[in-house]
Image (cartoon, rainbow, N blue to C red; front, side, top):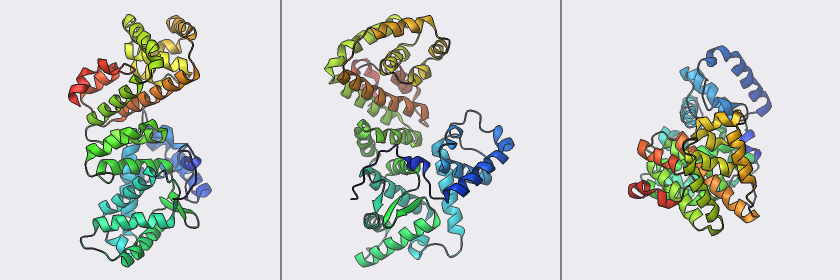
Length: 379
């Protein structure tokens, strides 16, 4: 494995190997010229907010819009549609790719990209040595082959497939001689999430989801969790697993239990003003000095009062200022908040969640396990 230490927030999100300066500039001109056609389609569309900072999204948006005349409502659907178009267009080109790659079906090619994304993401390999990458490709070729392939032939085929991937799609690029990476981190995350849903991670989806949830203490897995929730036909099981993970985490943190008990009691006492869950989220957000996205997302009235600099919220804030937290206690609350944010975002982006499950999950945010009996039964 190549020992290069990288944070997931690296500029990979802003780095893309598409002759960057010229092609990105052209795409922005295209976006400007399409303003009239797009204006009626972008209101409230989440992907539009991310386009400016992500050239790959703009590339895919252009491809999908020119092909279909529509803008997908979410990033996952944009990636799905864009990937299908990219693979189809390049497959239709003449004299492109080696015979092994040409013989793969569209689903197998998607599977190859997902498998590579999963294997590299699990190992934390944002940049991968060519030899390691060829081993992953060989493994995938062996998986989809109906007959056993001799090692020498498999090795040769893996080299040819890697060359085809780089030449055709440029979604996977050679950054320096012998070192490869996905051209965009968000696309790497999307394909890794797809590998979980499509069964390239583990044979059983339940096993894949349990593995995913166990990784959520690492921030780099948070976006994977949200993407998987968006891809699943029903996200109930995943959301329940995340909630249980949060409960187990906070149950062992004895130093913050007195505060959480006070928080629970206080939230109940003001439930005629704000929803208890939104109030609990707001208090923790204030203590940590972070954006009030969860609390405002849970209660529109709280969002309005916050914008209006409400006396009620100011009084709550002043009361919280009297509390004293150690560095370790704040670290615990930070982790608690981050895990809860994964759950909240996953609910917001999930394609399908049973209403009663979603309602209880929202009501029990920042509450310990004893308040979630319905989820225990459902799990």
